[in-house]
Length: 364
Image (tube, rainbow, N blue to C red; front, side):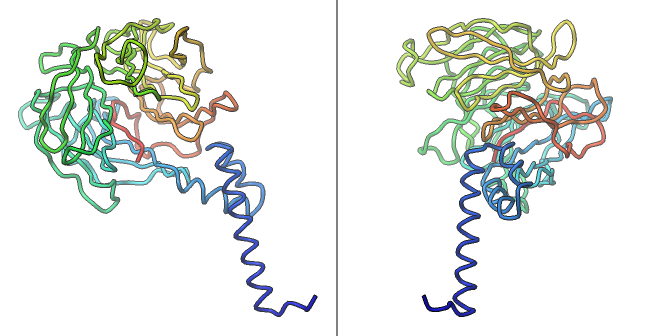
């Protein structure tokens, strides 16, 4: 074989290094979030490949909230970059608020309702809505028309996958009204107009509940007001995703009451509920529900710290949990790895001085 000249050797080397990086990126993808971070310590090429894949993951965004021990509502918004594990600032909310609903609709962060402080009194429940288009780091939140259903706090928001509305739609479940009553209402909210269309009501009034959409399209709600153990699911009687004659159906109760718990869907489709508070105070316990013919709960390992009014998100085979509770003086961020079945504390915490709770959050 004829010897390869210098330029050809350089091209050959670059091509093979890039190929190795791509291979490591594929390995990282099949290793999950925690596994990918472990690959960064194998070698330089593995680190490059793992970082390339980690950079494709959505960020966890935390918006507003209440800083504990009398510090009050906040307008700051923070973004956890999963490729660096560091929190970075985003544009601040137009309205300082806490106990509000939040979700990502067509790539935009939408924040609505919650408690605000006005010029005359504190803790006023608002109907205001604001959005950050595309989650742009250099943009600003803009105000949208208020909710037609009135002020609401402690509700859960779930995005509706559709393409006919101007700015998207979401479901707003439960919450607390301006008289402090826990609601069983469900509204379909048009983001662009604020128009709220009533849907079949929950079986139980709930605020500070956990609500998620299951892989088959059904919606499940758990916990909430007065440390409820009650769980219910909204879907067709046969369990399919058809919109025909959807009804709310009771599911097995959780093992303990959980007010202010958070929840998400695990990679295998189980509904995980984390933390919350009950008569014994904040809890670190976690459990997961396998929804099906034989629906039943089983325990997950407890978090490192007891939490309520925290936020969580499932991504790449892991569950991220941030903030919540006032039982400790630092705001720990931790992650549950499904494959390892254990909790790991992340090296960087939320960049606030005191525990932060009642935040809005979304992946984007």
